Amino acid sequence: MNINTRFHGVLADFIASDTVRFEMGSRPTYGDLLDEIGHRFGRDMPSELWDASKNRFQGSILAVGDKRNLKSMDTPLKADEDITFYIMLAGG
Image 1 (tube, rainbow, N blue to C red):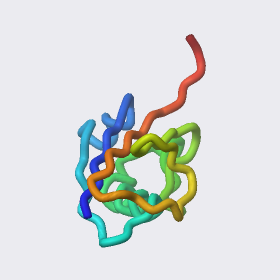
Image 2: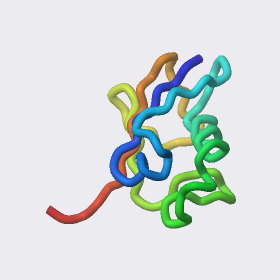
Image 3: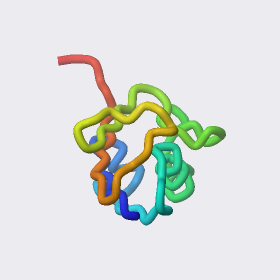
Image 4: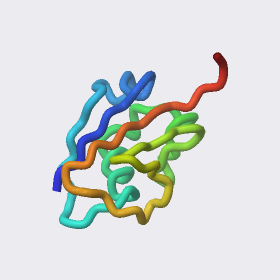
């Protein structure tokens, strides 16, 4: 199953691309996707954004799938789902 991701802001700088396509197993979860992101890009991200010990984003990162926010690591992903990651910043 393929999952398409889009990274906004400085996340794209650390990933070195604003879009990445992941080939996942037949029933991937949001946690599985984060494991793949960590495997491929975790060492390139600062500890303020990425917890390498847990293979998870930390801080105010918003993950949005097809008309839903992804929060639980157990959330199943849909085939060809587009998931966008944003850094939530305060200000105006």
